[in-house]
Structure formats: C-alpha cells, structure tokens
Amino acid sequence: MVRETSLGSRAFDAALLVLLVGISLLCILPIWYTLAVSFSEKSAAAAGLVRLWPIGFNLNSYYEIMGDRKFFNSFGISIQRVLLGAAVNFIVTVLMAYPLSKHTKDFPLRNVFMWILVFTMLFNGGLIPWYQTVKALGLINNIWGLVLGHSVPVFNVILVVNFFRNLPKELEEAALVDGAGPWYTLTKLYIPLAVPVLATVTLFSIVYHWNEFFNGLVLMSKADHYPLQTYIQQLVVIIDANTMNTEQLKRMSELSNQTLNAAKIFIAMLPVLVVYPFLQRFFIHGITLGSVKE
Image (cartoon, rainbow, N blue to C red):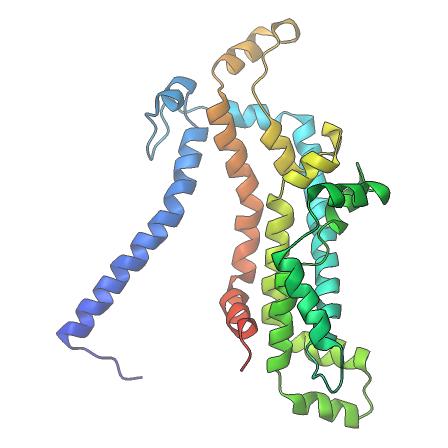
C-alpha cells in the first residue's frame, strides 16, 4: 500500500483524526457525565454543578439500588427475556429469511410474502388490538408475553434475506447435486456463511429486549414481574421514617431521584457495553452485506 505523504494529504488525515476524536467524545461524554452524577451528592446534582467529575463523592445511589431485592429480581427477568427473545428472534429470522431469499421460480409466492412483511413495517394493528391478542393467549404476567409479542423482527429478516441472496448460487447447486436437502443446506451452508449478519441481528435483538420497558409496563400488572428497564423506570425515592433506622434515614436524605436515575441508567447500560465488543467486528460487515442486493 502506497501512502500519500504530501502536505494536503497530511492535513486531510489530521482533520479526519480530529473529527473522529470529536465524534468519539460526543459518544463517551454523556456516559461519563451520567456516571459522575450518580456518584455526586444530592445538592450538587440538583443545582446542576456536576460536570465531568463527581461533587461530594458517595455511593448512596448504588447502595439503594444494589440493596433492593426487587432490583435483582427484575435483573434476572431481563436476563431471561434477553436469552429467550434473542433465541426466538434468531430462529424465526433464519426460518423466514431462507425461503424468502429464493427466486420466484423456486418460491412462487415469495413476492407476496415480502410485501406482507414490508406492509407490517409501515402499518400495524394498534396497541389495543395487540394487547387484546396477547391477553386472549393468556400471556399477561408471563415472560412469554414479552418474548412472543415481538418475535418477528421484520427489519432483521430483510437484512438476512438480502445477505442470503448475495451468497453464490453455485454453492447451493453443488449441495443439491450431492444430495443435500433444504434443512442440511440451511444449517451446514447458509448459517455458517452468514455469521456476520446473524451476529448483527442478534445484537439488535439483545439491545431491543434489554432496553424495552413499555411492554413490561403494559403486560405486567405486578412489580415482581417487571423486567429491569420497566422497574427502574418506575423507581423513585420513597422515604418511610417508620421502617428505617438512623443510618438508612441519613443515606436516604442524601439521595435524590436525579442521582438515583443516573445510577440506574449506568447500571442498565453495562450489559450492552460488555456484550457489544464481542460482536462489534461483525457489525459493519453484516450491515453492509445485508443492506443491498445487486
């Protein structure tokens, strides 16, 4: 590779570096600011004095959250939801994308089903019919209501369809000549070759199921069934002097909804921040290859 060493080229590289550093700071600073607020004292956070460093450093917000049994219960429900939801989304996406990637000669109704999928991206039945359907299926206060209510991620299906269509047809033809059936071709040929896009859509599913809170609020009537995001969205500082000792009252008096919200937001971000680096190398590759079809 020949690298341009002219003055204009170096100036362009420097400007590009500054731009990328600026974009990185724009992404990192909100997270850092949230962390600083979560460690700050109540008065400083309420007055808006916190910038990049905590003022009156304390761990009261984290003590309040981590000492709450309901927090860990909701955390476990969210973990369960992510595992079940990502698995269901993966299976449904692959099983839909494989036949829809075929030519109309092999699957005459392909275009009909594709238009149905696109239609659902533009229009839906509305919240009330959706809720009534979930209720009729007996999925209220049930983890499967959170999982099956959004088991068909249409955008993910379209990405995987386009990725499958970009794979050389000669590979499948060779497999058919060797006697491979559709299931064998899908599991032994298509899925191994589609690891980048499948990792990408799995990341989408994980982020969605982890961050989504509205379904938990609508479908769960008891706080014990709330996923983490629904639980922390409802979490406020409640002081009951009759049930607290002196130490607890002192800690609660130093706690505010602002610092507590900052702490819960940061804790909620951690799992995704941990998972993303392992899937990041597939992300851009999967999006670009699955986004267009020549």
